[in-house]
Length: 79
Length: 181
Image 1 (tube, helix red, strand yellow):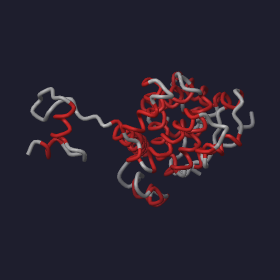
Image 2: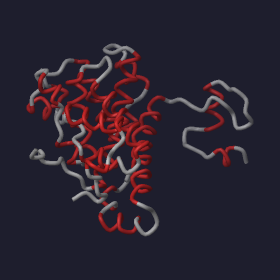
Image 3: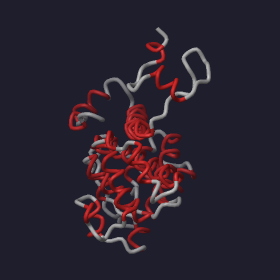
Image 4: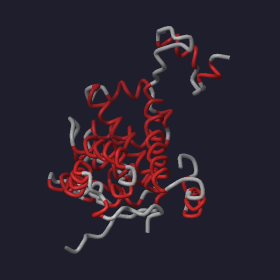
């Protein structure tokens, strides 16, 4: 949906129906669309999580150092 | 035919959802098709429709500017459904097709747009085509034209509508013809 929307065609939806109900597909599609829109917007605002992986409240500068410019999962950040 | 079948009108009984669908139809954005698809998950449908309507038709940024931005975004997303819908409120306020088309074109040197409008149109276009261009200097320029609250209103509107357009594109939806009653 985000990178190659032409691939999400009728046959793709046909395959989705083998695994999910129509209700679940709508739920997934709306959730994914919402995240496509908002994460790009958030990226332009340059803000970072308020808390470090150990639960400390940290400054935005420290948070940027901890989490980096690229998104990383919490599990990866705590290794 | 959309890839997810919309519910029929008589299958939707939630009064709050029906009211949101009515509000969308009155505005013209969205028409009943997208809400009836969302209605398969009524809790989601109500939250999403409310956000679509509030972000587009309420707030402290000119609705006509938001309407131009919304159509520009639909073209970026390649979504004929939202790109084909028009706000009756914006039309009644004087917005015409010529200016909508100009907002999706080379608006930078177009005298029909103010400096503030050009910044907002650039904000929407660059957000999904060249997000690296929306940097601190870009936001500083935006603050010469808009308050921080207005910039957040614009950013949230752009993000939400683009996200729903990206989803809508995959549904293969097109605006529904007027119903004969």
